[in-house]
Image 1: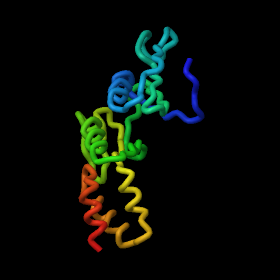
Image 2 (image 1 turned 45 degrees about the vertical axis):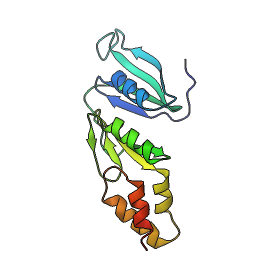
Image 3 (image 1 turned 90 degrees about the vertical axis):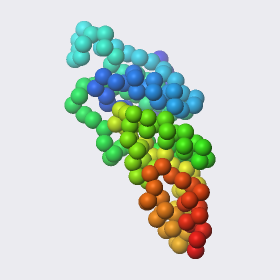
Image 4 (image 1 turned 30 degrees about the vertical axis):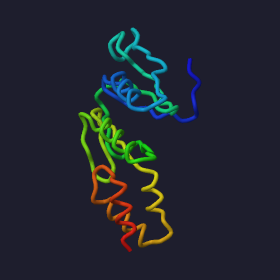
Length: 160
């Protein structure tokens, strides 16, 4: 059995837990499926159906639970993907939005309904800039974007 950390996000799916875990582990480096469990005769879902999938995304543990159709995802919970370059932003944005939906300000909803924030670390640095003019110009530029374009945000921040 895998060693558990103190906090592991649990994602509730109807029946797509294993498919989602496979999708995510193919996107993020250093990722793997750790364990798959199945419902037994005690239920509450059909015997043999995948119950849980323990997986890691770049070392971060997750659990996918095929719990049923009672709950769905919304934007109140999202996962931030910290990107060191525009190439990383482009890669994660493209992969996560495939079959999903692109949103504003670097947000994307994947085909399972899970929300992700594809965020360049340079954006967070500009928004926290001690010069309020630079910070606000960066924020204003970001608010008009879907996928984040760091060159454009840096241009806007430096226009003062």
